[in-house]
Length: 296
Length: 274
Image (cartoon, rainbow over all chains, first blue to last red; front, side, top):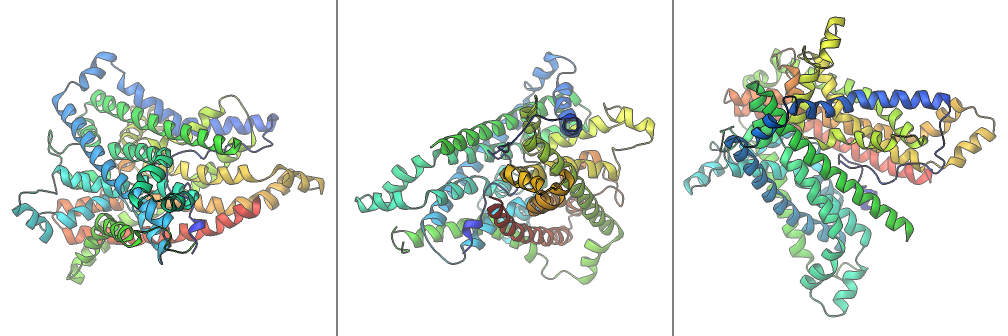
């Protein structure tokens, strides 16, 4: 069993590692300054310019047109749908994450490494394939889809399909945080709690979850950031009915294609601001957690 | 500890497996199983027509080129971030995360705008004969952008863990800076660099949102493989779409296996470095 090799921070996840500078980081010499300037040019040119441009384009005609975008009924319905999708996605993935974290860290069973690999699988699957997968499972042309339609549930080209596709692409986000944290914690606390007469439920609710709340919080934030910005998977399954199945990223695409650039970039800036803020919160949490464990 | 110290194993494991099957395995299986009964002609039209071959070639070549560029630039930036203290370093460090943080559609419209003919960078590049928007260069550029953090964030912690005395020991034995870098540092970070490269490549192969706006999506020229799936769906060719998706899925499975194998070696190298 090579579960110990499972390094939860290295695969495809946003967030800086807490460890930044080597012990012997030193003041740069002349060659060092030139190298730093080149690195700044690379990062500034590749990432800095696009980042500044999002906001520059959003505010190019001033604050009025920027704000007016958010008063549009279609923009508002897109925002409402995106929030609904994010809430449902987080609820499902948080439930799964807690369950998976508990199962993987508290019990021994064969095939644990394979289970971990399958949980990670959505990170390497193309979002478009993810959207197609939901369509091929519950689209109106499939047995499941046509049965669901007879009982009045429409999945493809409706909000349930958008939620299912978003759950797929964000599936590992909360689980990874909780699995990594709970594996590090081991099972001593739970065993003591059970020996003292608590039930498994009480142990989960009163011992395990309170201890894991920061890992859960970080996972929820990362999952939310990805959920509100998901584009590829949702564009396959949504059908793009304005005011009904258009999420914020799809509405951005529609506005951009109509050459409503200020509107497209106003929503894009709001979305980018939110997701960057979420990432910074998680990075700050990880850093303070790292400093705390290093200090103790 | 024996396996029975905490009760509830069967119900917890059963529910976990049921949810994984429902959310991940069943949808992917539905894609592959829908190929059941596809005729050879249909399959050939879906994944081996000139347009399809051009799309796969563009996706694989542009992803490979982008991941190689990320490998070089990302390792260099990781080195600078670890080795030097300088004003603005936290900003540079934070900027590295931006491509992972911002939604792909935002990246897509932004890159298409700034590299377009009237854009901030496009207006300067195009008179010099460099057309980025609506070309294969644009596709590769968008992939360099999304893959960049993977290399930096995989290499950076490994570099940071290399003890300073290792370099000092090398130089006290008379090794110059270049020799130390090549014979001492490089072998230690190489597995991490390879892992970062693989992660960046895996991401690029499936990337959609950041590419489609700048690509222009001309069939046979700038149409990427994930977009081919959408093209097939617009023709109501579900089996054709699934055939393209299955090729991409096989590529992702291969990448996942490679990354897991690399990480096993890489965590070993990390342990040896400390």
